[in-house]
Length: 415
Image (cartoon, rainbow, N blue to C red; front, side, top):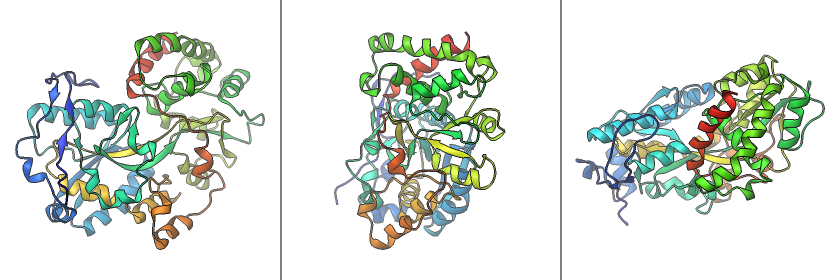
């Protein structure tokens, strides 16, 4: 079998996201002592993984996601001889900064093994040597994904390059209470007009919250006539040309928002609470499949519906990144492969479990495995992924994210 070495990505000079350090701008050599974590076959991975403990660092604010990992994924990993431990964190940069500190220290048995990651954090980590690369081809269940699926090949403009394993797909979605919203918008421009016509009944999380940040990028697309008119790759010239209309729009919108735009929800959870309590009529999410259970258990109003926009919304995928400083790389690979199994993907798609969209290509599954997905209940709240992802907009390259977020805080938050 072709040898698949575990290697680090290129190391850049600056470590991002608040970590003050300097690394040489060169190709990183594998960590000392990492040779015994390179494998020629899946059988070798399984043998090495036996008895290992794998720490999965992930956002702790997603109650369903945490429950899924603890009640479904962890027991399944134990059956494969791997002890999986969930480490809840406030934000993904907490995990990334820990890894980068360990890179600086030459650590080869660090505190982080897997990270639920995507977007700006992945690109920053790849540039700075946080992730192992070239390992996902060894995962047998990668064969169940579409090798040409653009969402799985590119993460916010950064090529995946085998540095992370796909976990689930996401579609940015607006949600409204149909009992209070009768003149339903059909485009983002109409949604912002609705907010102006209904003062105090709409808001969005403050960037750099992940959800608030993508909302701002959606507005960037809208004010420039669609995503086709915004280059995915970042340049200072494009930023200077295309963002003034964005911030002018958001400044104008501010006085019509909840609390007249004098304050914003700090994260998506706070916005969701406002929606659940009836203080606003809209919320927004990257994980719309979770809405089914939120309505069923009474957290959200019975009139909760998904708002589909004519121009579509941003879609992406979430991944599991393998830390370059992990001392349990084989165990982490086993967990990543397990997470891609039809059984786990179908369980995670159950609305009352987590309700996440699969990354598997259903046409590649055996009949028994395909039946697991065919048996998933239809939601009275959420359309199918095919409907939600119609006219899906691509994510901008991660280099856009921080400049937009920072300019939003300078021009909008402080207005």
